[in-house]
Amino acid sequence: MTDSWISAMSFSSFAAPLTAKGEPAATDKRGDIEDIAMRWQSHSSRGAAAGMASLDLLQQSGRIGYGPLLNRVVEIHGLAGSIGEQLSLAWAAEQDAQRFQSPDIERDPHHASDLEFAQRMAVRALCEMSTHFLLGAAHSLANLVLRVVLCHPAAAGVVNAEKRNRAAEGFQPGSDLKAAWPTFAPRGEL
Image (cartoon, rainbow, N blue to C red):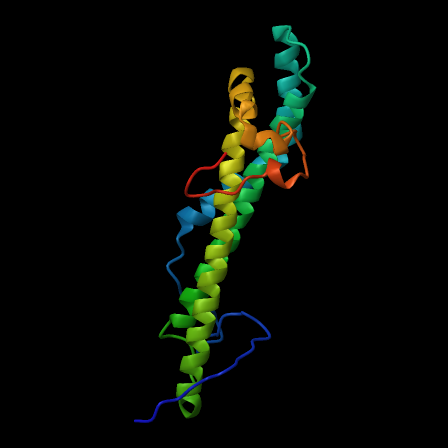
Protein backbone atom coordinates (compact mmCIF):
# COMPACT_ATOMS: atom_id res chain seq x y z
CA MET A 1 0.00 0.00 0.00
CA THR A 2 1.35 3.43 -0.86
CA ASP A 3 0.98 6.55 1.18
CA SER A 4 -0.98 9.39 -0.28
CA TRP A 5 -0.56 13.04 0.65
CA ILE A 6 -3.02 15.82 0.04
CA SER A 7 -1.26 19.19 0.33
CA ALA A 8 -4.13 21.57 -0.39
CA MET A 9 -7.85 21.44 -0.93
CA SER A 10 -10.56 23.99 -1.46
CA PHE A 11 -14.33 23.66 -1.21
CA SER A 12 -16.75 25.91 -3.02
CA SER A 13 -19.46 24.83 -0.61
CA PHE A 14 -19.90 22.95 2.65
CA ALA A 15 -23.17 21.52 1.38
CA ALA A 16 -23.46 17.95 2.57
CA PRO A 17 -23.23 15.18 -0.05
CA LEU A 18 -26.48 13.49 -1.07
CA THR A 19 -27.50 9.85 -0.85
CA ALA A 20 -28.21 7.74 -3.93
CA LYS A 21 -31.86 8.86 -3.59
CA GLY A 22 -30.76 12.51 -3.98
CA GLU A 23 -31.60 13.38 -0.36
CA PRO A 24 -29.37 14.51 2.50
CA ALA A 25 -28.10 11.65 4.64
CA ALA A 26 -29.98 10.90 7.82
CA THR A 27 -28.45 12.25 11.02
CA ASP A 28 -29.03 12.08 14.73
CA LYS A 29 -31.19 15.22 14.65
CA ARG A 30 -30.40 16.26 18.21
CA GLY A 31 -33.73 18.03 18.19
CA ASP A 32 -33.27 19.11 21.78
CA ILE A 33 -30.32 21.29 20.75
CA GLU A 34 -32.29 22.83 17.90
CA ASP A 35 -35.22 23.47 20.24
CA ILE A 36 -33.01 25.12 22.86
CA ALA A 37 -31.31 27.27 20.22
CA MET A 38 -34.67 28.44 18.90
CA ARG A 39 -35.88 29.26 22.41
CA TRP A 40 -32.79 31.36 23.07
CA GLN A 41 -33.20 33.12 19.72
CA SER A 42 -36.80 34.00 20.47
CA HIS A 43 -35.69 36.21 23.38
CA SER A 44 -34.23 38.81 21.03
CA SER A 45 -37.66 39.57 19.60
CA ARG A 46 -39.01 40.21 23.10
CA GLY A 47 -36.39 42.77 24.11
CA ALA A 48 -38.46 45.89 23.42
CA ALA A 49 -41.53 44.49 25.20
CA ALA A 50 -39.39 43.48 28.18
CA GLY A 51 -37.89 46.98 28.30
CA MET A 52 -41.35 48.54 28.35
CA ALA A 53 -42.55 46.11 31.04
CA SER A 54 -39.46 47.01 33.07
CA LEU A 55 -40.29 50.70 32.65
CA ASP A 56 -43.75 50.14 34.12
CA LEU A 57 -42.38 48.14 37.06
CA LEU A 58 -39.62 50.66 37.78
CA GLN A 59 -42.06 53.57 37.65
CA GLN A 60 -44.42 51.75 40.03
CA SER A 61 -41.54 51.15 42.45
CA GLY A 62 -40.75 54.85 42.52
CA ARG A 63 -37.14 54.29 41.54
CA ILE A 64 -35.43 57.13 39.71
CA GLY A 65 -32.52 57.07 37.26
CA TYR A 66 -33.47 53.80 35.63
CA GLY A 67 -32.84 54.74 31.98
CA PRO A 68 -29.67 52.66 31.59
CA LEU A 69 -31.38 49.73 33.28
CA LEU A 70 -34.06 49.67 30.56
CA ASN A 71 -31.36 49.52 27.91
CA ARG A 72 -29.68 46.77 29.94
CA VAL A 73 -32.87 44.68 29.78
CA VAL A 74 -33.02 45.08 26.00
CA GLU A 75 -29.29 44.26 25.76
CA ILE A 76 -29.78 41.06 27.81
CA HIS A 77 -32.53 39.92 25.46
CA GLY A 78 -30.32 40.67 22.45
CA LEU A 79 -27.51 38.61 23.96
CA ALA A 80 -29.90 35.72 24.55
CA GLY A 81 -30.92 35.86 20.89
CA SER A 82 -27.28 35.92 19.84
CA ILE A 83 -26.56 32.84 21.96
CA GLY A 84 -29.41 31.02 20.23
CA GLU A 85 -28.15 32.00 16.80
CA GLN A 86 -24.63 30.84 17.57
CA LEU A 87 -25.92 27.58 19.01
CA SER A 88 -28.09 26.94 15.95
CA LEU A 89 -25.12 27.60 13.63
CA ALA A 90 -22.99 25.18 15.67
CA TRP A 91 -25.78 22.62 15.43
CA ALA A 92 -26.05 23.04 11.65
CA ALA A 93 -22.30 22.49 11.21
CA GLU A 94 -22.48 19.40 13.43
CA GLN A 95 -25.40 18.05 11.39
CA ASP A 96 -23.43 18.49 8.15
CA ALA A 97 -20.40 16.78 9.73
CA GLN A 98 -22.62 13.78 10.49
CA ARG A 99 -23.91 13.76 6.91
CA PHE A 100 -20.39 13.72 5.47
CA GLN A 101 -19.63 10.62 7.56
CA SER A 102 -22.84 8.79 6.71
CA PRO A 103 -22.47 5.42 5.00
CA ASP A 104 -25.57 6.31 2.95
CA ILE A 105 -23.96 9.05 0.86
CA GLU A 106 -23.22 8.26 -2.74
CA ARG A 107 -19.54 7.54 -3.38
CA ASP A 108 -17.96 7.06 -6.79
CA PRO A 109 -15.84 3.89 -6.42
CA HIS A 110 -13.31 5.21 -8.97
CA HIS A 111 -12.49 8.17 -6.71
CA ALA A 112 -13.01 6.53 -3.32
CA SER A 113 -9.57 7.34 -1.89
CA ASP A 114 -9.71 11.00 -3.01
CA LEU A 115 -13.22 11.33 -1.61
CA GLU A 116 -12.11 9.84 1.69
CA PHE A 117 -9.55 12.64 2.14
CA ALA A 118 -12.02 15.30 1.06
CA GLN A 119 -14.63 13.99 3.47
CA ARG A 120 -12.16 13.92 6.35
CA MET A 121 -11.19 17.52 5.66
CA ALA A 122 -14.82 18.60 5.40
CA VAL A 123 -15.73 16.87 8.68
CA ARG A 124 -12.76 18.45 10.45
CA ALA A 125 -13.63 21.91 9.10
CA LEU A 126 -17.28 21.54 10.07
CA CYS A 127 -16.32 20.41 13.58
CA GLU A 128 -13.99 23.39 13.93
CA MET A 129 -16.76 25.67 12.68
CA SER A 130 -19.15 24.17 15.22
CA THR A 131 -16.58 24.71 17.98
CA HIS A 132 -16.05 28.31 16.85
CA PHE A 133 -19.77 29.06 17.18
CA LEU A 134 -19.96 27.28 20.54
CA LEU A 135 -17.08 29.37 21.84
CA GLY A 136 -18.92 32.49 20.67
CA ALA A 137 -22.01 31.29 22.52
CA ALA A 138 -19.93 30.78 25.68
CA HIS A 139 -18.53 34.32 25.43
CA SER A 140 -22.04 35.69 24.95
CA LEU A 141 -23.36 33.66 27.88
CA ALA A 142 -20.62 35.02 30.15
CA ASN A 143 -21.51 38.56 29.06
CA LEU A 144 -25.22 37.89 29.55
CA VAL A 145 -24.56 36.74 33.14
CA LEU A 146 -22.40 39.84 33.71
CA ARG A 147 -25.20 42.09 32.43
CA VAL A 148 -27.76 40.38 34.67
CA VAL A 149 -25.44 40.92 37.66
CA LEU A 150 -25.05 44.58 36.69
CA CYS A 151 -28.82 45.05 37.02
CA HIS A 152 -28.40 44.95 40.81
CA PRO A 153 -26.91 48.24 42.07
CA ALA A 154 -24.84 46.66 44.86
CA ALA A 155 -23.44 43.98 42.53
CA ALA A 156 -22.72 46.61 39.85
CA GLY A 157 -20.79 48.58 42.45
CA VAL A 158 -18.61 45.59 43.26
CA VAL A 159 -17.96 44.74 39.59
CA ASN A 160 -17.17 48.34 38.69
CA ALA A 161 -15.01 48.97 41.77
CA GLU A 162 -12.26 46.68 40.53
CA LYS A 163 -9.30 48.48 38.97
CA ARG A 164 -9.06 45.93 36.19
CA ASN A 165 -12.57 46.80 34.99
CA ARG A 166 -11.97 50.53 34.85
CA ALA A 167 -11.41 50.40 31.08
CA ALA A 168 -14.96 49.01 30.68
CA GLU A 169 -16.32 52.37 31.91
CA GLY A 170 -19.16 50.78 33.85
CA PHE A 171 -20.17 48.30 31.15
CA GLN A 172 -22.71 50.76 29.76
CA PRO A 173 -25.50 49.14 27.71
CA GLY A 174 -24.65 49.09 24.03
CA SER A 175 -21.00 49.94 24.66
CA ASP A 176 -18.60 49.30 21.82
CA LEU A 177 -15.55 49.36 24.10
CA LYS A 178 -13.56 46.14 23.85
CA ALA A 179 -13.09 46.10 27.63
CA ALA A 180 -16.89 46.15 28.11
CA TRP A 181 -17.14 42.72 26.47
CA PRO A 182 -14.78 40.41 28.37
CA THR A 183 -14.05 36.98 26.99
CA PHE A 184 -15.02 33.77 28.68
CA ALA A 185 -11.64 32.88 30.15
CA PRO A 186 -10.39 29.95 32.27
CA ARG A 187 -9.15 32.31 34.97
CA GLY A 188 -12.56 34.02 35.06
CA GLU A 189 -10.99 37.44 34.69
CA LEU A 190 -13.62 40.04 35.19
